[in-house]
Amino acid sequence: MFKRFSQFLLLTDGDTAILDSVKDKVKIIFQRCLWHIPHQAKYVLWQDAVKRKSTEWLHVIAELMEICAIRPFVDCRQTIEMMVESKRNRLEEIIRYCRENGYSNTVSYLENARPDMFTALEKRLNGKTTSKVERVMRTVNMRANVSKWSKVGALNVTKVRLAYYYNGFDA
Image (cartoon, rainbow, N blue to C red; front, side, top):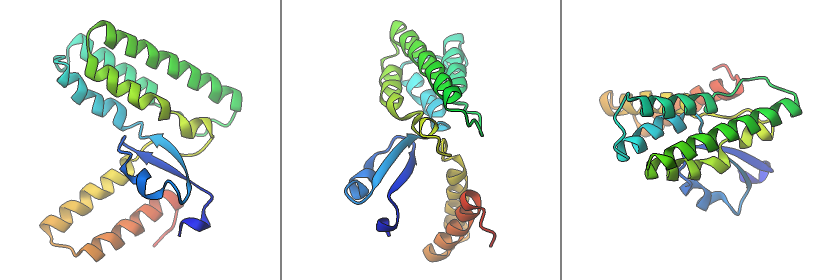
């Protein structure tokens, strides 16, 4: 299957385990899911003992939501370059803020996410989030567990739904 494609855009919440199985078979363009960045940051802020909904917590989360918000249909290369530069600068500022406040888990998380946050945008590819996939998976998982769908049936429903989302296929 991989031989038909010269490269893949892989969106992930940060888990790189899939790379081990495909890295020698196809070129991977790696993109962190921008939906996950602020949502996972809530957990690392908790690890850093930052009180939920405190001024500090709200500042970090609000900044990350702004940094991770990408306008669709931006087509101008220079505009994209300026957007990415602005977002990277804001990310550096929030990392500096977290470092100054002793939020070591948050600093580590953001530094690990930083290199792959804007890959798709810089390469002018359509991909920034996996939230559609996760919504489908949550629903399918619930139905498989509660309604006792078969694995094959759940997989088929997932394939059809994702084909519709990402390719416009109508079943």
